[in-house]
Image (cartoon, rainbow, N blue to C red; front, top):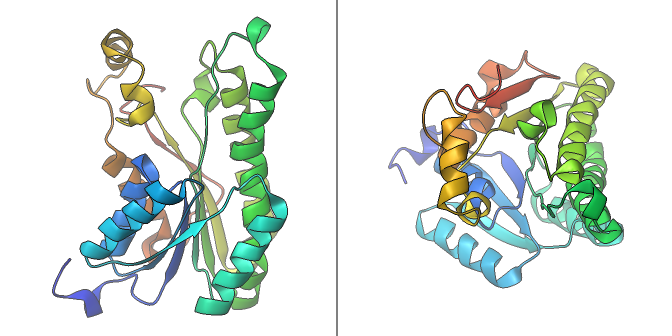
Length: 253
């Protein structure tokens, strides 16, 4: 951490990040923590989440773990109420958590369709609705929703995932219109193929095929996405709302 903590722009801000135990979510938390934000790190795997939060604290961040399953509406509401009681505010909401259950549609199980939509869309809805009253009262807030390049270009074997990520874009546009007058911006970030556990599990052949589709010639890093999210939280981005920031190496133009 920098010795100039008191000069960091996000000091005094409270940032709630879902899916913060690994990958893109952890990279976002690390970036915001370096810039002085208090981190509310949300995930459902307690052991992995607590390990991630311990790592953030070792780096000098103010971070706490909130273990909750985003598909459980009442649990989400209770977790947000408790966080607001402790901190009095949530300035930034980053809806990053997501799952994939891939299969060709003709073979897709109903349970796998529902699991993806419930986590990626319903979870975002429950959490945003729970946080929003405090932002409206404060007349300030930044909401960033993680969608995906596949919401725009599709991907065989991912009808459930693509549908969920396209829904996030529509949600972002509508909510941005609803709450712009209260000083709250709502934007989305659409990563392309990023170096995460998900892409690592695809195998070398698939990863090479992915890389061949990217004009910049490499997979993205979680830190590339974190930088885009950080920009949308900044005061210099205060006139940006209802947009989708593509971070895909030129994959979809």
